[in-house]
Image (cartoon, rainbow, N blue to C red):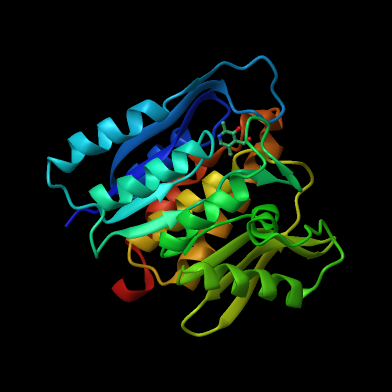
Length: 285
Ligand code: PXL
């Protein structure tokens, strides 16, 4: 049966992040994807100025209340950028309205990067976001978000595997079964992810060669690839490995194409690879 997801992120008209990334990636993976926009911006808030911003907080519960009357089963409830702490309580109420025991609650706590909160967000966003992470089966913070969620110092470099394991364990203690931390780098040459499973108390690090630059929206691209692969039946480690490869390839193609990095990465060109990998997944062989 076709999987159904609900994606709850902002729409940034230009800049390839949030819903303009989640919807095409999940759709390419064959997932019937419904959307609830949290805000409407002309661009994302990194590396652009003068953007417009319409907060859609007042729409979230009316939309969820109506959707609840339809009696749909969502296989995944996927949250990303929320336009402020006030939206967290609303999203928690949406979980009660729209999720059942079979819904994979997948939270990308998209509020910060490179040691800093995103421009428009309040300083208590990390503390409030803990409540949403506590309801999730899987969370996908970057290293900055992981540190801020736990209130420990963010380290841009010069840390080792034990720092990352401490973050992953601390986050799993909030509630999620799986914690995937992005933007992990133990040396100059490589960058990648940490994949932690609470049931096994085991962390796997996965790396690819580091590519030069700051790549906007790659957290959203990675999370969307990961959820697509999980819904496609891959195990956590298989899905994380595929999502990392697809994200790395999107970045590589963007650098090759020479497009300004604030416009996001060329994930569109990698969708055939995602589709192919999901059609030829290991258990089908
Ligand atoms: O990609 C994360 C993101 C999503 N949405 C908005 C953003 C950002 C990052 O800057 O500004 C509006």
